[in-house]
Image (cartoon, rainbow, N blue to C red; front, top):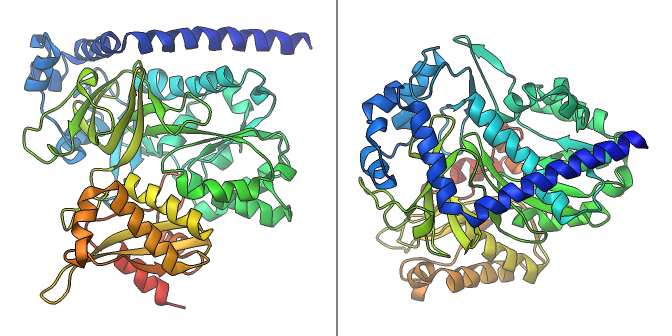
Length: 506
């Protein structure tokens, strides 16, 4: 009892201290961000990249924006390749020994994102502590520390290459966690780092089915696969029967909207759901309020943020905004400068601000994941909202989906083609399509204009996927596991055509 009291006292002291720090950057966002930027510039001014772009001469944010180029991964890759091969002082001081391997969602080619000691400690691990701090601050009666946390990360093993390490970000984080953190996590490190997904899934179920799990952390789609397998293996009616002390699911990577009803259905009782926004490149946002659908932008993780209005995106010299210049409700492509050595790097996500005091955001889509074949500018957040509406009207539940254009020809208007895998099929498919289409018109004026009298766009073409279609498709692509995502939208047919073909096979 005395040990527990001491432990709780230490935890409460830490949480209180960190909440004070978060409130400080909320109160002083611009000063915090300016301090982050100039700290990074000072750290890297003697690197090859710093000398090339004159870091020492930068005296203002305007200097920084005019002197340093905006880069994609492909632009920055030559520097990363040299760092992976062991060269020091390329774009961050010293030798970088860890790289997160990420295939992304648009390229088959792997990306290798640098993970410095600073980004590991001051961004990724700090965010993990903040997630707990913000949650417990909202739920002071939480018993989180008395139970295990179920983590579901990627499937890649850590590999050695050029005397550096690379693997899924989750594998790198798990590999470098201190021992005391390992004690509260399940499955064990050995199982968490297994490479083959099916083998790993079986091992996780075997280990966790008799554990006392109080929290879960992972991507909603893959966690659902695990929980469904767990229910089947244990012949249990719901998750709460297995883990009566489960109180929260920390989720990220993809929108939770299509999965919310499925989780309610299998839980067997109420739990809390908290969203996070992280990637190999950094940890950006944490839901800081119970029941909210947006996230607090974390300003003191060694990441300096800029934002490109989507109407400027794709120009050679787009207008870029800092926090004090953004507007609510607009789509922005996010640029990051990080303590992992990325300089004005296009992460590929689009965000919307829901609040400026404090700065809160929602992820609205991907810069490469949209449909704009006819000027309709359809983003993922539009689709998610419309699908939520269509599901409510027709009592449907969606597991996975993807959409793409049907191109116009001389005799026909274009259309959007969709394939949906349902956990629960609509009670009226025609009504589902109608409500989906009408809601898109309601929330996207460009889409509505193109749908006028079917002149440019016909009504959506919808296919129902066979059971486990997306799982089978991801398996054929070698993309099973926690850090791989089903592409939701594409401006071409590279995803939907193979899915439709697979869907017709018995």
